[in-house]
Length: 272
Ligand SMILES: [Zn+2]
Image (spheres, rainbow, N blue to C red):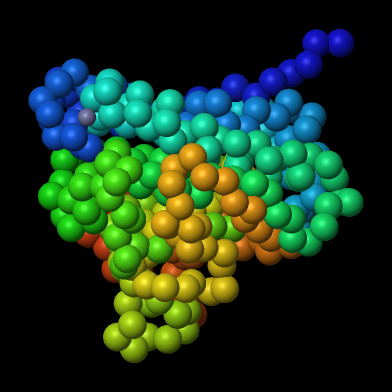
């Protein structure tokens, strides 16, 4: 019997064909940056259905045949290839590993550890976030990331933290430049400047404050070299809402500018 595979459809977000690259700022022909990156998770339709069955009750996660992503025509070929060849494989391997645990059914342990290359993952996440903006921007975050993202002799800035958690949803969400309380429910002045990049099966939060709701931190390995491996945990028993943490509720408020309003939510097409 022919095995049905997922087809990923990308929502296009583009500006003119030739212009300044969001990362290196050189004026060049612009290429598409895919979020999620190509080469990540590729479960068969049946496998995907099983995964979503595990999380029934958490939220409505209806199975559908297509899974959406977003692509941004905002970076040059050279920057695109650097992310794609040098850093994305680490991010993709992590997605594949987590996906494999989910595929194995209900027998998985609550927390698993897996070898990963966090320094490469950090650079991939940040590169995609800078690409995920229709206009070239000189805000502090973009400037900081441009400074070090491809220069591996430079450290990840000390005030930049990346946290990750299981994201068993079909939709992809990318949201840039928003502020929210660094501790949910605490509306004092402790506000974090944030970005999220979420796609099956892991979500990532970038914030300028240490610690967020007890999540595991990728940037605790910021001093490793890009090729170094370390065991990192993934909690398979913690599932948040698909719009967490940027969801506005009793414990959270969100402030954002134009790029927050430009946030891209790529929902899967539903089967009729
Ligand atoms: Zn470039």
